[in-house]
Image (cartoon, rainbow, N blue to C red; front, side, top):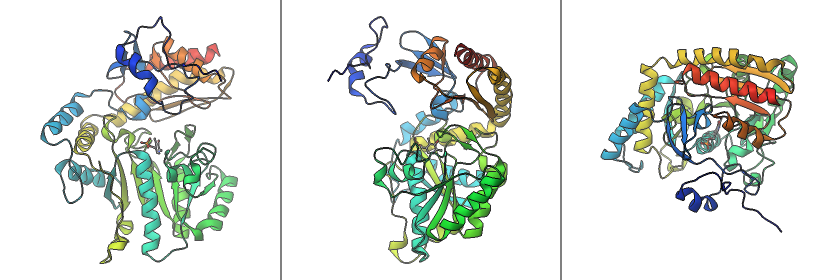
Length: 432
Ligand SMILES: *Cc1c(COP(=O)(O)O)cnc(C)c1O
């Protein structure tokens, strides 16, 4: 069979030696390697700018999958990581404790609502979700409720790429994927978006509650599932249903956490306190891999006993990595010092104004904005790669997926840059 090697850049584009010698040895994320256009060679980043090795400069509309909320290379985070690097880049977390992790845990406990105050660190969002699921399972086992082993998740949700996380993601993107057989199928139901859906939601919960330990959901925004927005009422329905049936509520704030939707945590907009919360993505301001699973006191206390078998048996090798924790502490400093939530509100206004012209363009199904998230939902996008290429030609990095074009810029982005991004979206959509 004929196979081509499309990951090679066209000969007219000058690429550095590292690119030429390495490109045929990496396997790219979510990518059909046979047909993908070559990835762009990046030399460096700064603020909301991506500097390509061939001299082109792109304005970044995505902030590296929503992580770089203060922009790239923020001097305060860089300094904190440099300092930590000289003192202690890593130390195992078993039997040893260190200042960056303990300070961070205390700060997260203070920032999160209610008694969400026990932090379990890990190194990626998917793993934080696995840990949340493991906590919810063993919580039941420790209480002798051995029948309650399933999870109730929402259609349109996305919780990561590992086995358990896939099983609670939308089946269209999760359970039907190869590898989904790794974990048992879970219960995925329609979110209670309106009165009719609410009745069906309550029915489904009623039916499954006795065999389930927890409801898991993304608060306010289902991100990778299509940038679907929910009202705070949906969140309150989830909390009420969980309370009615003695279910735990796991809120996955990996996308929404740290200001993206307009409040520091999305659940705050609804006044809802989850039993377990997962955090990652913007936790370190987009500099290092770190995640956290945070439990309320009643969850934590279910693991306390003389019996060692009731302990939570989990411990990633790089758990609470000091460099990553130092970066996260520095990021939290910036949330204390800079008016990020006001910046998010201002970004929201510019996104609304800038993307509004898309409303009347053919093929556009919806335009919506929440916090620093701007979404143009198309009826369909036939040529995703073509669209991505046209954005690069306009000097911006925007990466549509499924049928959505979205902007999730750094909170520190300059107004002109943000307007360049929205203008590029309008032009690309107009060009069809
Ligand atoms: C990105 C994401 C994850 C997975 O995080 P990784 O660090 O990629 O494993 C889980 N849940 C949500 C809501 C996410 O946006």
